Image 1: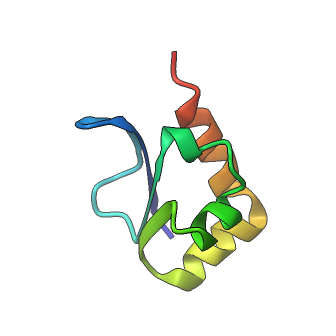
Image 2: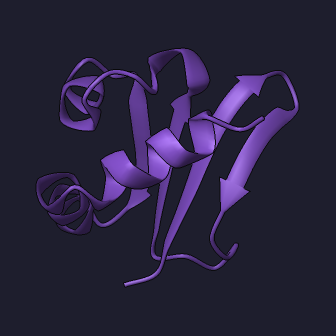
Length: 75
């Protein structure tokens, strides 16, 4: 499974990790990056396109949380 993560800091200001042809694209605002990704998804603050089952695997194993925190802490 190929994943792309997008953390938005403002209009046209986002950090992207992963290829454009990813199976799952996870998008979250930087302001919401500190929230547990599962909670953010349930609150509608974390969006995804692609397979929901694959997203749930990423949320369960912690890969999404690790990537989002890394991208949100840009210098």
